[in-house]
Length: 288
Image 1 (cartoon, one colour):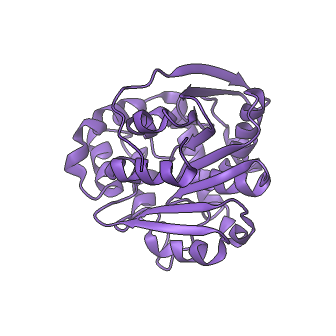
Image 2 (cartoon, helix red, strand yellow):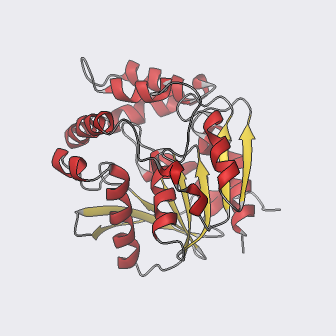
Image 3 (cartoon, rainbow, N blue to C red):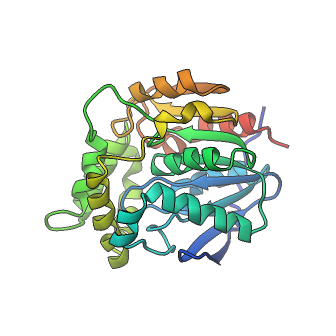
């Protein structure tokens, strides 16, 4: 069993130059490398996604938190970039260049939602480099029974439409993302302020347009049977964005896989079920 840690880790922040553009990276801790990829909601970033989990994870791992292209302090892919390649393909390219620049060869990989799609694609692209894989309601690998876009995806698409971002829209967005939204009122203002960056807004319009043209995310579900890394799937039973029914294909197709489902939990397992998330991830990856 792992023990609880409450001390806030000191993050080291730096910029890695790639051929695509600069990627912002925050990291802390020591040990085996754990790369954590954030989700794709408006105003998202790596630290915003996982800050509450770092105290438990950094005593065991060197946690590497890149802001994916389009988010946080990383560069913004243009409309032309997104027409030429999907956001997942762009992210994998940028991520591998970033890890190479940091001298990181083998690593554990964790991804949530949009970051989950990038994690799947990375595990398929460089299978000998990914030691273990943790996927939280990942896009791309998920094949739902119900209609798409889902309620959560619609909430993301409409956030920047009409009169543009507002605190009320962010509150409504978090209401759809989580099972008990009143618990996360403190998150509303921070995410709302992060969503106001003009370059992020321009990226999001281009991203939404590309998503519509491509009729969704990359169909990674067609290749998940090729994943070699031992894989842990984490899912909220009440997820209205990447719904639990879509987990069945991955559970059946990935060779070495296990699934943990949280009742009373939506799309943000790492926040809504923080203690259980920290314990399951640490135990699965094999803490020192």
